Image 1 (tube, rainbow, N blue to C red):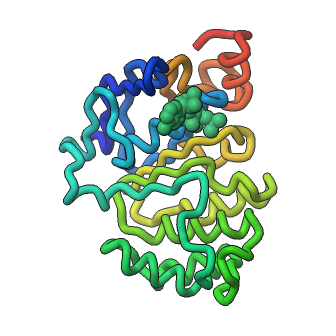
Image 2 (image 1 turned 120 degrees about the vertical axis):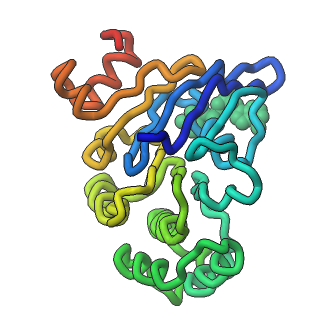
Length: 236
Ligand SMILES: Nc1ncnc2c1ncn2[C@@H]1O[C@H](COP(=O)(O)OP(=O)(O)OP(=O)(O)O)[C@@H](O)[C@H]1O
């Protein structure tokens, strides 16, 4: 099977600060992958690079075996850790704003997802509670027809039970083809939707494994294994 995403030797310096020190990993089609690491590990930086919003200091990134040119950029859909829509717009207008912005955006799907996620269409975006704005952002992202979806701490402001339920509901793409990479600290809440995990430590991917492998090999949940690795209580 060919890889959806190949990341080879990606590094990122901000002045003297080397944030990514040669990241290597691959993502397969149809997988939901958690990018886990402590504060400041470089998760957002890595997602920004993969989205094309930041040019890395070095390294190679291939999507379906090819470099991500400007023409292929819409095949990568990125959700930052804050909503990017102008706050004065109403939700429904925000949907048409996205339709103007992205050629691969499906407004009917956005309306359906907003309804599934109980986002009120007539509300002004700046007046949405944080968790509701995050739901809108997620609905807009997942209404784009992309190959790779990058999510930075999705639904971080939504309560844990709802978060897992909503993510399970909306990440279930029927074609099983799309790949989702999401950075999160909320390992416990997100774990039920994850197929694979990447642990980012000291600028490198120190573990890439399926959630099943972790459970079988270490007899630990992803969260327990994460704690063991990052608190020095165990190795990878
Ligand atoms: N544009 C920038 N200029 C300079 N330093 C930056 C820039 N962006 C990020 N950094 C630095 O890179 C490091 C990694 O930040 P990043 O936001 O990628 O980490 P993170 O893993 O997403 O953290 P968190 O989990 O707290 O969101 C931090 O030290 C941060 O200060």
